[in-house]
Length: 414
Ligand code: NIG
Ligand code: FE
Image (cartoon, rainbow, N blue to C red; front, side, top):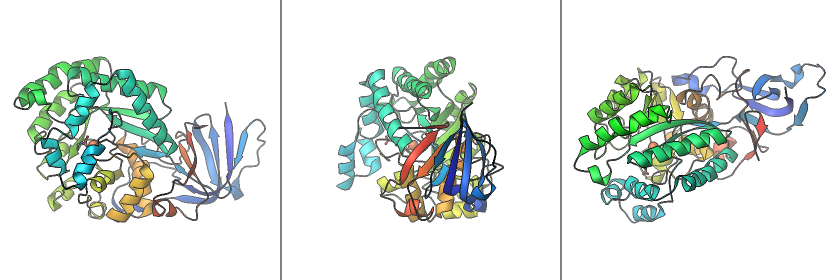
């Protein structure tokens, strides 16, 4: 067994003896120990506390690390990304600056279908290499767990290729990865006039192979005007659920059209986006078990209204924040930036944003018992900050990378 003692931590952030999803006001409390120690055994947190209470047992054979001036917090849990994609879409970025809307770009065959074309022309190995570079970058930015979706293949071959890439990332990476099948991201050109044909393809051709090869943990649908209706979403999710895939869904991004209510009926683990919310929508999600996952990077990049985070917290929702990392609506997986946007644009307090990006993100990934807080027995996934004056400095100094090192499963990554 390997053992490491970390001493003189200026503040140890997110210490919890007991762990659960934080709902409503609970999200504002971020337990912290000043001048702390932390003991890691193998890949797990074994003990922690105040330096004054550091046990005086003999520590021969265990590594020691003095981190005076530094803060330690749980690594980010990013519960919504489209990290596997081919190439980039900065031409559309420029089109948007010139005045075109996201919906108009989609109608022109840009948007998701632009990435679909690129993805289907890219080999599995090349796709893996591109995704690997992004994942490495994100781990250095403090992300320790991540959800990754398919959804740029939109053919049997393309969707399976994406999911196999995610499976390979799971095998090779030290991040904890969850895989989501998002075959229902958009109707491919070949099925523009034949929606039922594409739904049949998802249900009869894609899902059985995905289940047989164990390629996904979750199923997702983009429920939106011009994409998938609420009843189409229901049909697709129910088919996925027969294979054990739990729904986590894109709803209420551009319109409030009942996607959220259908998602709740499907007992979705998480309902994501939520930029367009009526007061009925807020009340409905607050009374459900579904986590509200907010993606401030997408609202920022698309210059759209942000989700009503404060109202949702007041209504007792369980809120997570995630990056939505994708080439069209949020080309960044930098979770510290998502924290800053949550604070600046959604008026979340730094403590709330950190909880939303760690412990609640972990619950949104189904990893709440394993990650997301400094708790004995949880995996040692940690961010070591550079010297900072306070925890609020992280989202405040939004343009700086304030991470000194990152530990994943007990090992410092380089
Ligand atoms: O979550 N909203 C749908 N899907 C992605 C965008 C995908 C894209 O534009 O490539 C999102 O924002
Ligand atoms: Fe998304």
